Image (cartoon, rainbow over all chains, first blue to last red; front, side, top):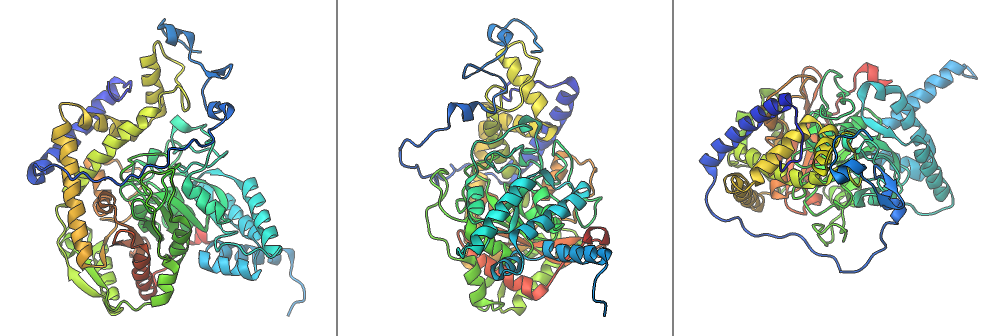
Length: 88
Length: 509
């Protein structure tokens, strides 16, 4: 659900087995080595000056959009209204 | 002696010269350009010819920007002719990994999701290198969204190792590494999240440098795991890597993790010391090297240790904490960050959009499922799992605690030592097409993830050639922002070992 992926049954079976294998590996390691201390709060980030810089033009920003109409990104009507499958 | 050459001899002579040009070090090419012995256009044509001749077999490029390259090369030649003093990289042909945004040039991340994406801006690293006058030849193949270590997860086609076409070039910057090794680019940029520059460099017999986290701008590098990602260099020699790094490092306010500081010149540091490493302490994890790598790799790395000692360095045995712990911590943190970073691909504003959708939710789900390959889906699922409320403490929080422990451990090593010498890969480049379980694949990153978790700079360079002619790399990890010192040690090792992997006859032209 959180991953927002639609998986086939075959994919579900394969990926479930893979995730179980990875979780078992991580469980074994964590049992062996992890302490219970809190991680140090380190921050590397430095915020830049809060200044307005020239933005992308509307045309540039929309150039990679799958569907555009009148300067707006559009979705199929049935997606907006939730009216069933579409092939448009 | 004949006074004229036959047309066939002219062709042969030009082809030999082109081949020599395409296998030259960047330092030599820069000198040739400066002296006017070769033009940037001639150099560019030689590389484009080589790409046309060999890339069908290698698969290093996803996009070749031939016309743009010729145009840039002609501009550089004109500027040079007019007497303008140009930066050292001016006129040198370069290739970029296809996860570095290039304004007006398709940037796919080797994914169906971004198959038609043309960025409206260039990455900070690309701006720096293009701004130095380098000539972009094109965009290189890679593992999809940089997830993998064999280049087989590219959605388009795999990359073949120039030293054995049946084998992987390593990954995820496999296209960048193979391009440089095969003479299809003078140098290349890649990205390294868990070893993705160093691993393919080792597999392809070239030099790969992952700089300190924060030393090179990540602006415009399509994000995989933001706290681990770093743009790195792929070159034929350490001096080439130093030269590119000198042009690449520097602050970029558009990347909040870019560190504002002055970087010592890597090139000058190498030239100041030569092969004299007296006073340098090198930490060597002997038990790890002997216990977790195949014998050919172990022997090669221990031979490199002896070579460093012969330059005057002091070797100090060190003991590295459980590498399984590094792998677990890396996998959890990388996948958690990937699941967040890749949430932006929803089929609405850009990227692949599914034709089959009944609702906003199914538009998202179908677009993502059609656009992402299996490895990417696996990592997104793992990432959302370890971040979910019921499992956050058991996995993600513990991985962060482990990362802190690893960071402190490496800070300790690099307080006592100037650099750490260890393997890059546990084994020789793998054969293409061999299916392995997810945890078996973790082994590809066993020696490289530590430098990403801790943020230290790390460099891979060839240290031996196997009986079958495959390159073997060794890794040097240095102090944070100590790229210059790291390059100095690596150059001394390179000069002492003098390992030069030779391409097969079919790729020598």
